Length: 225
Image (cartoon, rainbow, N blue to C red; front, top):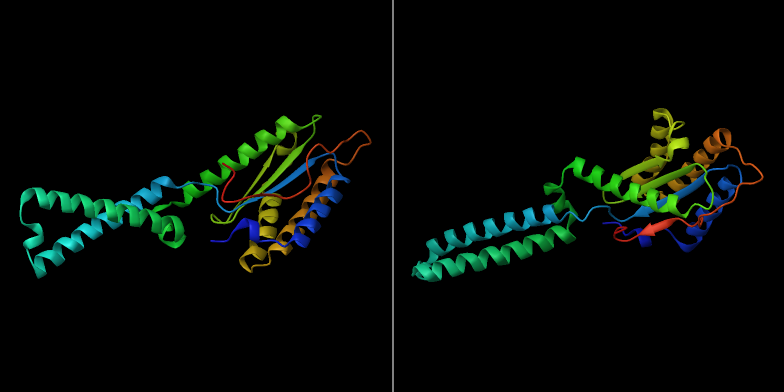
């Protein structure tokens, strides 16, 4: 799985910060761009993977033991102890495999669960940013989650009215299409430039506007919380 800390070079992070700063000089809106390695903990999926491997291990060991020798299964108490031990071992191995091999974990994670996890993290980021605003102003959140391959775009009450579906789809594609080609900086650059044009038209800069947020891209590994 891609590590969000290692996705961009120091120079690329600096250029993204500069792009965000230039955007906020053109608009009254506040722009926050965040990227996480993943958004959900997926404990349920890893537990299901552990249960699957544990059950498979038990079934395979029983068949193998029956085929080679029945000595392992002689005695009721020993049979129970062996089965419990195999289930526990298989559960631990399966859970660890799902934790580190995400193609395996994907079998047990639904698309809806991934989307919900991303939306929860983006909303948490929005709530935190709203609390830190020094003055009321439009707020736009662009949240990218690498494992889920999802982009969540949120706006506060004022900005939300202006976020039409066509713009949202275009902005997401500006990120997702280059990301599929591993052109990560291009994805950030193109999406910020599109955002800059949109916000400067809808919420042009006024003299009393102040930037109350850090312009650095916010990076979370593995996740926000």
